[in-house]
Length: 620
Image (cartoon, rainbow, N blue to C red):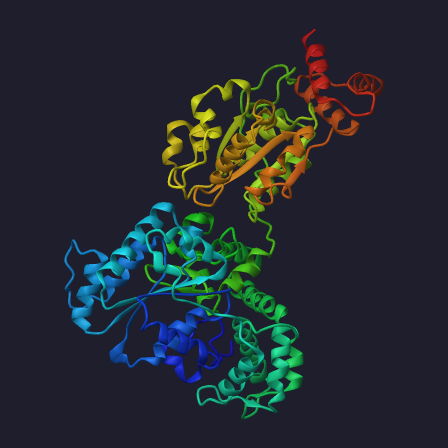
């Protein structure tokens, strides 16, 4: 693969000051602020170059003797990562075992005699992946650093959409919003200077056929509208260089023909992923496996997340250690992943994470068989629903089982699924005898059927008396798993079903109590506990769920309606269960008579009637 001189999706660093253009005003503002406060906030949407502004722009304003910068990323825990970064710079071994962060920083200052700049980059990871306890400890540490008035500057770099989360810090750190800089997408004029000055620099050495080419590039990157996303500009320039280099010749030339050949920016990222995955398919393994493996590095919200090598291997143990090693080597060398400290890896930018989150894969295959159990002599269940032990006798719903399995297990963009349908259609049987016996072979499962008796239990009644505490495990886990639910492994995926949800709307009428219940449901699937939630409700209560969507976005979109079996499906249920009971119906008139007896006036087969009728027929 042709190596290009552009930064692509990497941030600019101190070594890149001679090719860092277009942010002079923001750099100067940040530089002046650094003398006015010890706490700075840099925010903006993804792809505006926040990290580059701090690590290259601001750093370039100082002499090396005037700045000692330490960049911290959350990794597995922000507080641990902070201490680890400080210890890495303790080259004089001055730290003592009981040193807190403020003592470490004071010690580093005495060793280096330079002001210390702590850069907490991609701070949104704390709110995406962290816990309330982690947040509280970090706030306490920062407050201590500020009170100590050390020769230390703290710079928090965060994506704009997570800025509101910092309001929870304001009570302990009132000045957190006092000095802040919003990094906006770049203006066309500045982007033009970036292109021209970068291409003419000694480090790059690219020839523009004429300066109007810069305008054409900007039009492609912005699609003729608005400001310029620097991420996309870098990706576009990288693609231009690689294609231009293939033309041969002594010079790399960017002209209008080349720019038009590249196409639209929305295609460039997709093409980049596709290009690398095609190479992966030729050199390493199938494209489908490559996509599935890369999705391990994408959060539920479509952002990149760092993962340790050992956790990658645990997530897909079927690949084996050698394959994981080969995958890592390939995607690091091909600029899809980058290595971090502590044997961690991450996607090189959120834009790739977003593209991956929007790319469908075949996903986890559904087990084709269910565990064998001791079965009753009569395969029909009378008034009862089928349970997991009778999964081998649950016929007529193969298509519904596959559809529900894919929604719950493979559609991870939303961690909740709504199953609804009329009374007597077999919703509970579909869950207990169709879905659960297959999912149990892959993940931990929990099942909870709501009832009047359940409302009398104190642990369940508490769900309606107040909101959940973010620092505590969800109360629902205790309902599903007993005392073990308080200490479950958060890395283990759990598929949880709440059946007969209509009972809540039958027995609870106060809106405040319903809101508390909704908040507990949302707490269960907020991302920290790795839970997928399946809610089952009768048709006539569907309208009651409108308010729930405020707490669980998408719950009304990710849904499956269970319909009545048609006569063909009902006949399959009867034939296969009778065959199991060693009764075969060869006379079609007999089958028609049975179906007539269990069909309602609207032509729909009532499964409850069918089960009751066949149970009594076999029992006589």
